[in-house]
Length: 357
Image 1 (cartoon, one colour):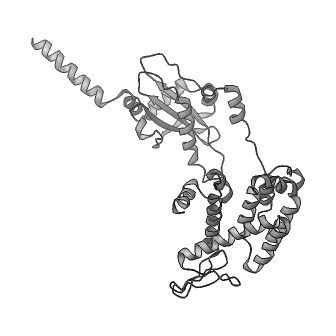
Image 2 (cartoon, rainbow, N blue to C red):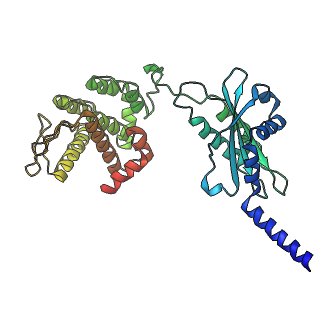
Image 3 (cartoon, one colour):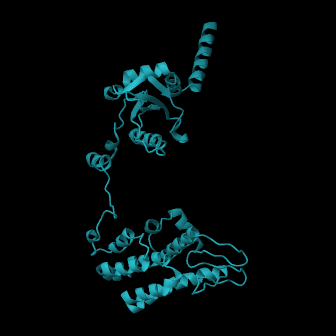
């Protein structure tokens, strides 16, 4: 009876110990010992990688990239080693602490390795080599895909798209003649290509001239791209050039449509002014709301009124201008992702503007 009781007690103690020290924690603890880590790497690293590094320099790093909600299934250990040419390389090991293999383990490896590489982005040096390794001790046969590409519906095509050079659309390296002016998008592409041109009136005139076919096509969609071009540049035009800008638009668009677009721009200024108790002066871009005594500079919000006595910089004014563009586009029911790509605002910022309208 005594022996049976002792055996039961010993079994209970063992079970408690197993719960307190999961297998993956045990493996990780062992791997934190440099000698054990070196032996492990000598045994299981790919030969090509092993020949490039000095395993006597192995060092346990403190980083962990596994999300908190996955800590029960996965743990990780990052080991650094010196290469034969005295550069740092890493071995990133994921330890699976579950009965079945994780189908998405290859994707998780890529994610965590990229996070590891991110810490090197501040330096302009090349990224270090990282060798991925998975340690599995489940009770069932391992059957998860062994690489990222096998997770895609078309592995070879996915590998060709993601492992090779990405497709680059370099507007600065592209000549004006390479833009397809038979497409609506040419209006925006031409504008973005010459976005840093100082003479904005000349830029707008060139767009009307070179993108004539596209603007005619755009007429079928109620000038959606043309409006974007006009709205964006309105915030960049100096106040003393506003009348020339308006006339330029009226000269190149049907009279009624040009007047409608310019009225939309004017209305947006009025709406904003009314909401703040502000009158916007035509000549100076400055008028003071009597109650608030605020002065607003041309579309840049450069000056504030006597009550505040502040001058606001061009950066803030440009930000407000971008918000105006976003609000106009929202009123036209433009897709939020497209607004984000044009204005540079995040979707969250655009949604906040939408909620305030």
